[in-house]
Image 1 (cartoon, rainbow, N blue to C red):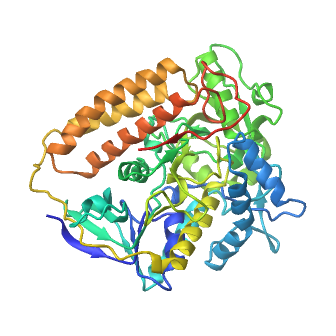
Image 2 (cartoon, helix red, strand yellow):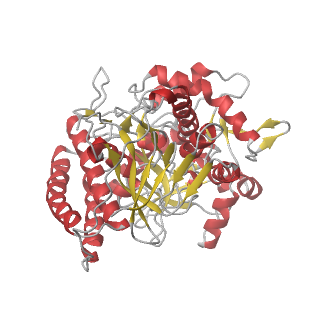
Image 3 (spheres, rainbow, N blue to C red):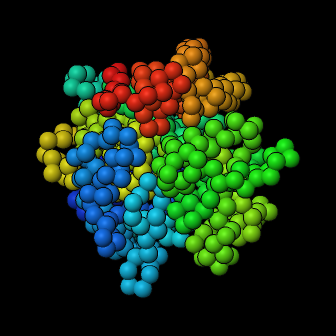
Length: 534
């Protein structure tokens, strides 16, 4: 039976920028419980290096930021949503300043850097570790608030819905979540009037990713199983510049290195001298082209020449400049034997961001009563077919606040949760076949990388779908007969997310933004979302 049922006013699953922003905007009126999969600070927010995009520079305009976002998104963005988010950006930055985020300053003004796809300098940052500084400020504020309870080490299994009511109402509401306590191994039930999914993306579906270990698409998979629509899952952003290192496969080299003048060069290869700056051969914006363009160019050169990596070089800017702008990256690379002030950095593309997700409106509402979503797990219409650099943290702040505002304004319309059935653990046993989980996890990530990566074909996608169908039967059987564990929960969600990605990719018969297929290399004249209905 489920142990220690917990009831709160608002339940938030995820403790990054979106989740904590929502919590802080709700806590003055309501009891808020925030669940974290492991440590409170172990999500994607703390890993973000670059910064937050906002119109603050003289001469820059909201219209310019909107157009840059639309261009990067290949016209698939919802313009009204883009305008809404861009317009909220300066206020979001001001609130972070009030919380004590130590943004870099230039005199009395915020220092702004520039990243790929942006027509102006508009990236507010804390050196090259913005996400960590933001996470710490939000977390300290949440820890200090008496109405916020932060609960680490809870791995969400499934949303508690009307199907789990003691007396089934058929209303389709979401009442909270069942989650495994990592410390006890038992399943706990958390109930609330409103639930916000802020669980991040699905980067770990791929073999190479800059995402943290826990980015296994949990919120997207749970919402889909509960009956919510998802959209545009084919648009998986591959960051152009992840450190190439055989031991460290997820260290990101921030976009700002290129924004501050870094060049992408071909390395020495088979007796041929390297040093050719190749991005001008692909796009007039060179290294400042949007991420999909740069990632495909690197992928093309790696495959054309049989390379393991290409070089990113900013040593020509001088040692003092490099160390001053990128102290975290400099120290990390120095520890690996690379001095970026004197030599180039070996880089490869890696999965970086999930642009699709759970469909939400501008209030963060999903299709299901009582369920909201914010951040990378959602599809808000902001990113379109490719996210513009540094719009991700911005989305978290804006939609975290929007969801909180809608919940507060419509609290009287949110009924208290009814009696929910406990999780039945009596029918399952412990498993001694953990090797099955590890094997299937590795297989999913490898075939997704090979068949559903930067360049796709219909045949590759069909091969991936075939493997997903076979693995689904195996995982469903395993899930039904053995006690749930964090690894099994993540495997189930990885497989569900992989299925959604492949289904969306097969449905899009064009190349647009992050989805590039050799079978349909041209972009259709009218942009349409790929919407999946459970």
